[in-house]
Structures are given as C-alpha cells and as structure tokens.
Length: 454
Image (cartoon, rainbow, N blue to C red; front, side, top):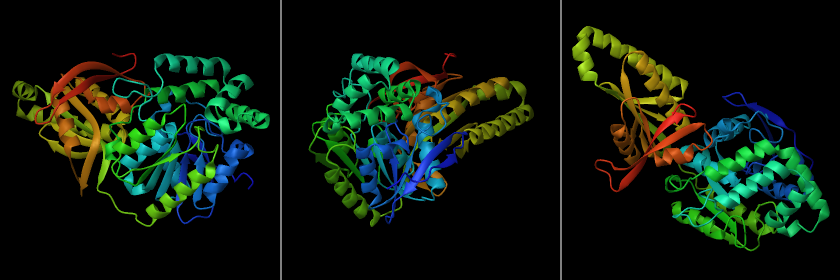
C-alpha cells in the first residue's frame, strides 16, 4: 500500500494537524501514537507499514501526527501539548474524518490519551485498546514500577544531546524494537523516522509530559470496553503496569503477549492484531449509550457576601451581584464550561478539561477582585452522572467540599486535577490532607496559580 493522502484539520486553538484515512472495515479506528509520529514517513519503515496494513484489513483507520510532530504544526510548547489539548486534537481529527464514533488504539502517551478521552467522551468511543501503557510516568511508593527520577533525567539528557543520531537510535532499537535491532536497514530507517517525527525540543516536551502524567484516578471511571495488551518481557513498560491498568478499569480484558518489543508495530504483530480484531469486532456489535462521564466540576462562592450586602444596601448589592453573574457566565463561555446551577451567589459548572476549569477559576477570582469582591473556587475531576441538564455523583460532592476549604481569592483543586494538567503551565502549592465533610478518608488539596504568579 502506498502512503495515503495527507489531509489537514485546524483545531479550536488554531493548530493544523496532519492525518490520513485508509482501510475498508465496518468501523472507524483512530490510532493515537506515543509522540514520535510522521504519517508519511511511517510507511517507509517496513515493520510500521506492515502493522498499519494489518489494521486496515479489518477497520477504517485514521492516523494523525500529534501537534508538534511530523507534518503537523511545529510551534509546540509544554503549555500547548497538555493531555487536555491533545484530547481536543483526537476529537478534531475524528470530526474531520467523519467518525462520529470510533475505536481507539493508543500506545505509550497515546494510551493515556485514549483512556482519558474514553472516560470523558464515552458516547464517541466504541472501545479502547491500550498497548504497552503505564498509569503513572514515574515510580512512586504506591506505584513501584517504571523509571525513577535519575533514569528519567539520563534519558531526557540523551534526547537533548543525541536525538536523531544513529548511535542513540541504535540504543533505542535494542531496547524498544529488539526483534529488528540487528537489521542495519531498519536502524537507518528508524533514525530517519525519528528525525522526521520530532525535533529534540518536541521530544523533550512530550516525554517530559509522560514523566509527569498520572491517570490512576481516571481508570475506574472508564465505561467503554477496554483491551490492555502488553508484551511480557517489555523492559521499558513492565507487564505489571499493564496488569495494574487492566485490574483498575471495570471489565477490562488483558492480553499478555510473548516478546520484548515495546511498540505494537514491531515483533510478532499477528498475535497482537488478531487479538485486537476479535476484541473490536465484538465491541462494535455491542455498542451502548452512556450517562456517566469523566468531567471536571467547578464551584464558586463569594466570600463575605452578607457583610458586603449590608454595607452597600440592597439595591446596590443586587446590581453588583448581577454584574458579577454576567461576567462569570462570560468567563464560563470563554473557557468552554457549562453552567449547571446557581445557588445564591455561587456557581456550579462542568468542563471537559481540567486545565480550562482551573484557568476559568483563576479568571473568575481576578475579575471578582476588580469589582471589589472576593471569590473562593474549588475544582475536582471525577465521574459524574448526567440526567438531562442535571449533573450528579460523588465527584460533585467532592468539588463542593474542596471549594468550602478554599481561602478568599483561592482556586483549590484535588490531587486528581493536579495529576491531569501536567505541562499546562499551572503551578500548585500543596495545602496538605484534609477531611471533606461527609466523604471517607483524607484528601490532598492544592492551591492553583499560573506559573510565575504564585
């Protein structure tokens, strides 16, 4: 198969993404790569082309270059390559390709994107396949796998100094593509692919994002069918990480495969692709609608509103409150939030991205100060239940309790929000663990600010 035609779509924030569509299957399949991607060059590396041909034999396949890589716009910075922005990119590519609902196949960072997209947009997802994936980028006391900080520092230093060189590519081939590492033709093609896929700076941005990402709180909220595939001798992402992911997604299946190749388009592809084809074929025939999604909730509350109302008299207070409400609604619209309810002088809104919700909260606090008011804001990301225009669920209660802990002029967020906005340019100051009224356990909370303003 020759390289399919390259098409472009412009995202809501103005990035142009390159994508291709090929195959003749009964359902759409979106392939979400880790980060090193070039939709034209991948057809010139035979193991990659073979994997794509196998996918196209049973699905209509949509492949794309993430922002900052391959043929897509290259002006990528850490603040523009967040999980939130890249999830918007998946949606934009699906819309451009005419895929109302699709299966998702992701690996490395792409698997994390698929997991969050499926949790937040289940009505657009038939099923998910997560290959060679990790739930947390860096090893921790409660996640004893993956690289530690020193290993990450060494790897990122090598990217900074040696990305795209034949010597560094040979080392990566031995670790990530051992089946083909002895083939000099493959290694030369892989080096060329890496150079065409990403600059050293882009590689640092995306791999740094993977290092900081933690999607463990997202996994239990995924409702769509999920297949976790992992090669048992993968030295980069240990099979225990795949087992952890499968165990924490309700109903997920785990397919353990022989071999040590980290990437799906390497090594024994038949066993992997046959498993994917069977799984997606069954899921395609069992599509259901969902009324629960992953969402970010935001609560606001005016501080000292009673005292202010007494001080300035009823009529002036009503006018001031009406102005505040108009301006909050304008900010909700700017940051793509949806107003759910207004109780007294406080708002309850939902967002499809946590970074947008936090930035909206910061803007609301700043705007309120310009009116002589003080606002406290709470933000949490979790599973909510949709009932017509109403939004319910434990995540709503958590968000309200977090807001109640915020100080005047503060945007207080849960640890889940902090974990999902890595690379966004937001900073967080830990405020310790707290009991939240009516909720079990103790909860870590953080005060949010824009970088350079805390």
